[in-house]
Length: 306
Image (cartoon, rainbow, N blue to C red; front, top):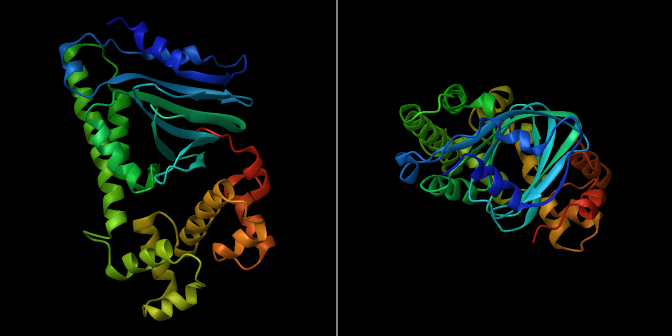
């Protein structure tokens, strides 16, 4: 197949786009790989990757592209709008150090959130990688803080370093792509199940936050309940779940609030209560801190993707 094929498929999948003179979407395909090697029929393969620097306004919305997309933010911030594991459209912040996995077959939208957003974007074939993606997506977390996972970072860097376009290096890239998705899946599976080396009390706190996020919690109460120093509790919880306990609880609450804002007509004050934040003003401040907008603005401006 000719190299231009994937770029043609990409532009055919676009629903809408807004770009500035600084960057054109056609620039994505400067490092597109050939797909006429025999291994491409059997092994996962990279379609293209590119380091990108965009300024606001920049956005595009697409669907129906047979590829998975990896977006690693290195500066500034962007926003991803797509379906979560419950089939509900939601917005996700892509800040420095995050790596997001996007199913390009489904409707999604990328938007520059700051004056500048720098990221590396990599499109890969679906095929056997779809197994990993579906498992990751079903656990509700397809955005990673890359600095936390050394194995993931190593696999990602190996993919980007391998730029020779021949069959041998293509097969090596296939191995590195599978390694990346394997590490991504294992990182989420360990966190989600609380298995392997995660201490039982850390897994129990995590389970309580996910299933009973509306209940009142404090760091002192948790430290007393599990008979552990609160500073050690914060350090160990962050080791396994990326955030300190109260940061993680707020993340769960805000994520749930996003769903309620888009799927119900409940008032802001009621949603605040439903997710366990008694003070509505505090809820609004926290929501804006985490998303960049107020709850009401989020409800009004989140694009409808279905």
